[in-house]
Length: 444
Image 1 (cartoon, rainbow, N blue to C red):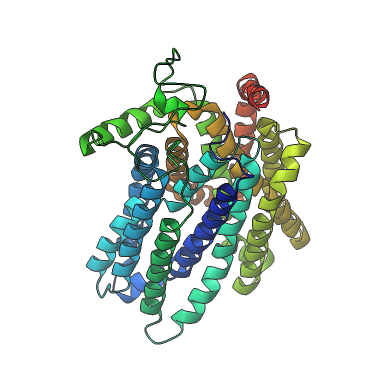
Image 2: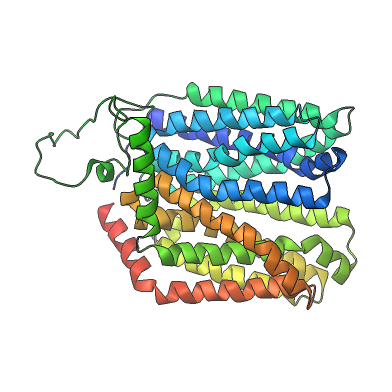
């Protein structure tokens, strides 16, 4: 399936640049406020249990809403869905800025938990703009731009929080960034009426060699990247029904293996980081400051790795399955090496390899999902993928706690086992993945 807007067009390039800036500002604003949340809850008098309950509720909201919001963006249009999500998230962060007690704080987390999916919709937007060959490269650059925001945000937030009323200043600034982001999306170059990438539209346009009377019986939603035109008869109830059908269609499809691979790899990497600071202190007597430097080093490398997706895709002849398999193997050995490292330099080496492999693996898994399930719509697929990752975030604290009962190295060792299991599953499904990659090459 070709791109709706080729990358070479001025509008296509402008939209990509705008979406990169949207991703940067999104994570820049979020990363300013997120590190301060636990401290703020404590200042409001919340007990650790209350803080844990609020955090879990936020995770549960994200788990169930990501698929729904992603599918909804397939129906009403990316631009409309993206503006809505950004503005409602801004409302949530604005409420955080006036949270003078724990009840207002808890209420403020609800709109953010439901609608903070702007990055997922931006990725779906980008997937609509480019061809399948270009998609890994463009997604990699988007991840790099977003990661830059995540690297800079905590520095600004940490500086602001030292000022009188620092948390409230930071929350207000975050709200303003999100409002600016919504305005940026609103002013983005318009796109032709050919799919969900445009704002809600009122008619379906056909390619020049097709007419409405064409004998081709393929559903319109498949021809338009899984998107349904938003016309006057498309009521709220029909949107709800369409979202339910699209999400259940993915849930009961033959894509369980790729989603299971995503879950296993996500849990493996999260287990690596789950007790990283504590393990560094116990194993190598590293100070929190040095541990922070090491984490920032890995984050910076991960951001830079996104720019390597284009050359790597060409090197692998656009075989995304093979790229994913090799990056997963590198992730497995990096986690295993870290779990048994006797020297600090080995930890730094493993962190270097892991930063590159996870950055490449995350992009490849999304691209493979979009290739295998393109008839379902990119927004639905990316949303379901985010839900799968949210399941991992719920499971990791439990797995990490049990593994730490045996050893500080227990969580990464368990992560290495799960990474190996995902590699085995990919190998068993090789014909499925590789066949899809070959068909992709033929289409291009």
